[in-house]
Length: 242
Length: 242
DNA sequence: CGGGCTTTTGAGGTGGCTCAAACAGAGTGG
DNA sequence: CCACTCTGTTTGAGCCACCTCAAAAGCCCG
Image (cartoon, rainbow over all chains, first blue to last red):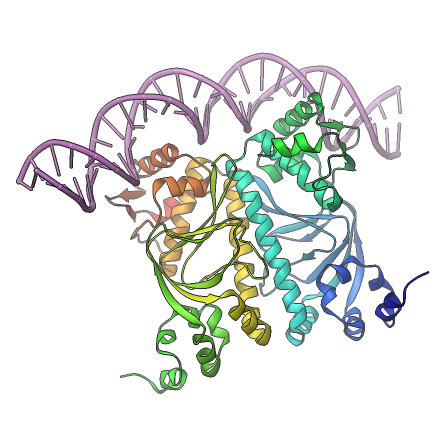
């Protein structure tokens, strides 16, 4: 039995938006039912398989998107091929760089991803007309800044084991925000390969694997087959995150 | 002999704003003469000596500011004292974190600094009333994101010498944007001590010093007394930046 | 069951750290 | 004008965390 409130809120809301996280915690929260309808005329839900490229470093940006499901990784690559992941976007994050002609990063689907896609000119027009939308995007950008700075500390000053512990903590928190201070453990599937984790943490695949093995040996986590991780002792993990 | 244009533009503009960079390339560019006057009623120019703390990590934010002169460094510190500089702000950058109760970083004056200060509630009210102001702040935030990501690559994937070369290149570009592709050299005074450079690059003071000596030995730069640096061969510097 | 991918683990090398000493400038006071 | 101090910088010697290279093992899919 649903309450009256949700009836009011969902009346006239496009079907796809009704359960979309972007409407609750993301960009689309700025829009009322009428605006959502306008907005939805320009959007299209697209699905991308793991590894598909959404944006290319140095190439023009054709469209923006909101992550609805899955994980998008943002990477930058040096001339000789060294790679660094500079951000991970989860639902309901916004993907793309407003007010820039070309993307400074490559964005690809780390897992299978569903995106709510909107063309560049369409979003830019909607943003110009709707200050609330712009405010949401500002909040998103500020979150991106904060998160980037958090990782700069890890990249610059943490040891390999601290990096890996921090990474597991962050992923855990993202996939289940209630776990933050919870002393009980949790299990999840890593959205990244070892190589990608290494590119995120500024390490090599070998070091990542060794550190994970160490955490397993010390009964802080359990490492299952196929990227499954169980956090047995969140306290200990937090403690090792520096 | 001034042209007519500047007369139009400066009529009714507060004296302090007339030559302020923030009005030309920063946040205040969003405001017309009338709005600038309203704005100026809430601002005050304050001067801070090198080392003075403007914002403290984990402490409430009392006021925002625009850098008018000097360099502000943003740092994060781990529990055991390891430090990482996560950003440098030059004129006319905005300092502070909108929509947050506490600061995620410590901000201090790296050199003597002049700030155009505005209280938190005052700016928040003005932003709520003026979408153009919000757009400027969004642009600033997006620049901060881009710059942070640029440095994440350096922190995670570049060698010590590449880091130092990149750093000198960035500082040079900031202090004189015309130099970018210019094959001729330039000279400037570093706004940071060796220890601060180390905290920026995720290195130790010894490594920074050694790398600078190496660049000097190789006639790429010249290191004078009192933090003076002359870039002799910008091409070679760029080449070593990775 | 074989072939391709990812992951683990090992042995050895090295870039940047640690620790330590000497040096250089800018004040400060005699 | 010269000690003296204080802070910042340079340089050296040795070491260790993490990388490199390499091999083997696990998992997935046809």
